[in-house]
Image (cartoon, rainbow, N blue to C red; front, side, top):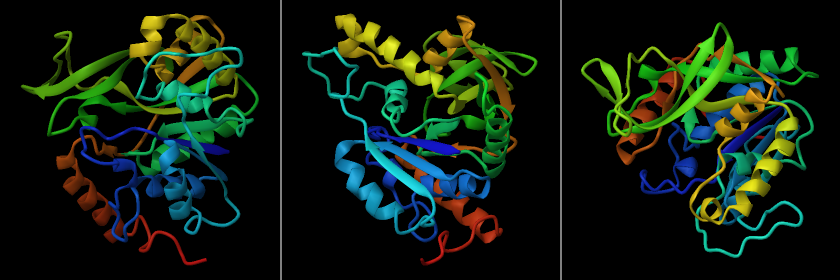
Length: 296
């Protein structure tokens, strides 16, 4: 099974490249704890998507640490990576978005895979549940979203964006992207729309279990996206939108798999101290060895 980690963000609110910040007790990146949890649950292929200038940094850091029998692909998400026959002549600095990051891995993945953010900690049970789902749905077109509870995913230091889910039983119906969620008076308020939430809603933290059929769908969407000059200049392609379009078209089913664990992330610089403390606490409790990787 493959774990695809997205690490191409610029960390503008964090102030530096948070994906490559040494948050662990022995200087580990946050993503290394996710890789460790994935390997314990049978994942044997790690794909990391990052900016071109960070490919060597990531390879040089990870390859000596993770076991030698684990396949590692570090790929660059580049603006010039377009579908055959397509072109873009406008000006653009930001990557094409998370769906394009997934599409970057189209030539190295040929089976079910989990995809998630490299700068989030998802909890050990989330990887176990995702791995079990991938094994059970190895040859069908059923996707999964590893779901978290909204109130458990907020930041004390500012608003956050989350995909608020509508769920019927364990079936995902839709994902509503809310961009400025903050806790207020025991509830959660979206500052953009004014929508109010109880905090008990299931949300997407961009942890999906996908089938390779998503690559063809992303390419089709990307072609349409590039044909619209306004979109191509100012917008991005997002995984939830792609999955939702496949779902609404009846091309796939999507199950919501409970994470069963805790989550934390590093959105703001002020989140760093808490993340460092969390990782130290989990290490002290014996949930992770110290150092995380034995010498090879």
